[in-house]
Amino acid sequence: MSLENDEKQPNWVLWAMVVVSLGIHLVIFVRIADLYDSDTRRVIELTVREENPWQRSIPQPRMHRKAPEVNEVSKIDAAKPEVPDIKMDPVDADVPDTISEEISAPDTTGLSADVADWQPDAGGAGRYVTRKDYFEMLRLKIESSKEYPESARRKQLQGRVVVGFTLDPDGTLSSAEIVESSRHPELDRAALKAVKQAAPFPRPPGRLFDGPLRMNIPVLFELR
Image (cartoon, rainbow, N blue to C red; front, side, top):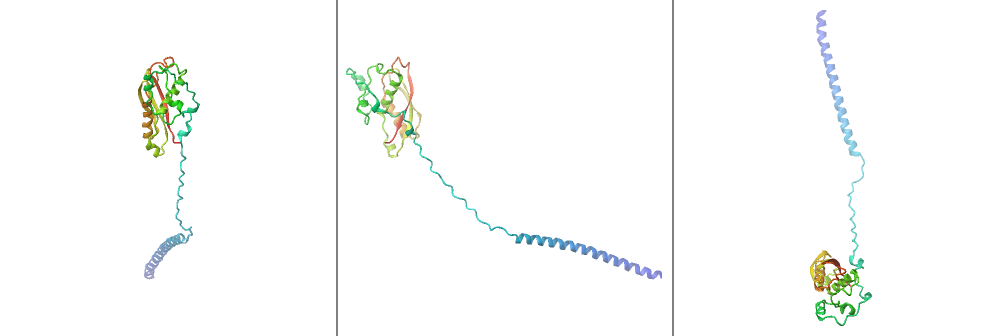
């Protein structure tokens, strides 16, 4: 009787181990199947998801606006010579010939007869009542010596040049330089040349000026 029990006990243990092994393998198989099925479903979901068709984005061309042309010269009216409105005193008959020869060099082509024939009196002090009168004379004298460069005229160049210069008490030009450029070398050189050709100037009145006279004057180049 005990021998039969001993023979049955190992068989029961063997079957128990087989069942446990099958259970373990079944659990592992189910887990693997779930993982595989989950990965498969994930791939399928990504594959069948609807998306809008890709379209190439073409940038719109930028519109370049043409910058407005700015003509600085046309805005500066104060420095334009108003020759017809200037009342010039008649030339004195007793003007010395030496003074006439000194100031007859500037080219007065294009100006009215009154300005072209104008000459200061001896000493320069009796004609100018105010400092403004003397400055106006300087401006007109320089304007009469101005020559528009032919190269600048062909290129349609216009501009405003500010020339700074110093006059000695006797009216001699001691220095001249460009204070504000027109950005066109041809016009800058022509403005500086006009000031130098207009010299020497009438002697500044001693009652209005003391010592050397330093001033800046604008020279306009405008095509008409």
